[in-house]
Amino acid sequence: MKRLILSAIALVALAFTTQAYAQKNPMVGGAAMYANKDIIDNAVNSKDHTTLVAAVKAADLVSTLKGTGPFTVFAPTNTAFDKLPAGTVATLVKPENKEKLTKILTYHVVAGKMDSKTIAAAIKKGNGKAELTTVNGAKLTGWMKNGKLILKDVHGGMSTVTIADVMQKNGVIHVVDTVLMP
Image (cartoon, rainbow, N blue to C red; front, side, top):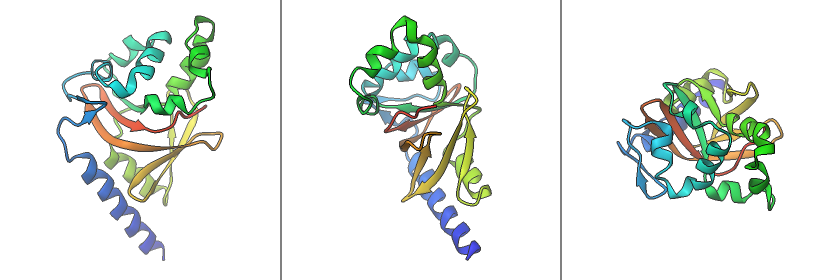
């Protein structure tokens, strides 16, 4: 039974990895993402990540995410931010909420470059689940479901990776459909 479960995990991980590597410069938000550019230089071109870019600027994290890293970023789309209660984003980007915004944004970042193959290996090693420590110190739990990586935050909120392995010169971005909360 355990062997069957591990085989199923490996098969799902292979599908996750194959889908992710299908394009050299995948399109995200209508723009090609180039592996020779950093996280910020690519993100600013995605029309699906304007809210994330504005939040990163408000939290003064631009220079960090332009740094050498490497970083793994689970990047919420504008639609993901729209799922938050009305007024949440407008409140978070105010200067007096910079600390809270920074905590939320850094909860979407893991130190190191964790492509889908690395995440799949961690899931396999964890018998179907992987615990990822974010740069703010809190944990995310990841597993595969129907060929997609699912992430669960510490409050039970869940997000799905919709585009995996968007390679950057200073890490990798995985686009997610829901904002995770620390």
